[in-house]
Image (cartoon, rainbow, N blue to C red; front, top):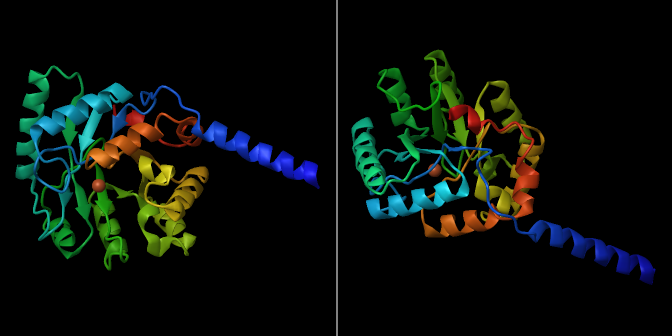
Amino acid sequence: MHGSNLFSRYLRMLFSFFKKQTVTPDLSFLGVDMHSHLLPGIDDGLKTVEQTVAFVKELHALGYKKLICTPHILNGVHNNTVATINAALDIARKALADAQVPVVLEAAAEYMIDDEFENKINEKEELLTFGKNNILVEMSYLAESNNLLEVIFRLQMAGYHPILAHPERYNFYHGNFDKYEELKDRQVLFQLNILSLSGYYGKEIKKVSERLLAKGMYDFIGTDMHHETHLAATKAFVATKEFYNLVKNTNLHNQSLL
Ligand SMILES: [Fe+2]
């Protein structure tokens, strides 16, 4: 009895040692981050262009070659348009060129799925995409969007490939894994937040993200970078063996966006 207790304690120690083992961060196997709030002053992400330059340098040092910024478009809260986003992108690109940071900076958006978004689709307004007509969409953390399936269908009919941002963060799906399966059956692409795997958003979200990842249901992984705390937590997590053990040899195809 005593011996087996000692043995299981030994195993636990060994396990936590391997989990916490640090490595030199190297995200070059991903190459591209496709979800971030790095553009200055237009949503709840970075505030100044100086911050943008500093964060882009840090992300470049981690191994990223291309960063696709995705400011929120959320009616009444973040009233961004193609014009406000492109203007902020121009400012950021000029500052990065002056600072000689060798990273490709692009912009799309993170669209909240709501009535306003549905109107944009119906009116055939220009939507911001990346790669081959990919469009990043999100929902409230409180409830599923009423018009979710209709919006997905309309986007697909119009030739877009909807990518659902951080599906693991929608707590209202946690008890109903079939919802994830249904969305995948409808060809919705899934994007994982790096910090979900670290436990940053809580144990439950970590557990769900690991399950979706193990089932090969994620297509892309992103930083969803908003501020200093995210940067510090991301840098710490991508310096652990645990991150690479979880993420390497999965279906993630960020590289296809290079
Ligand atoms: Fe985001």
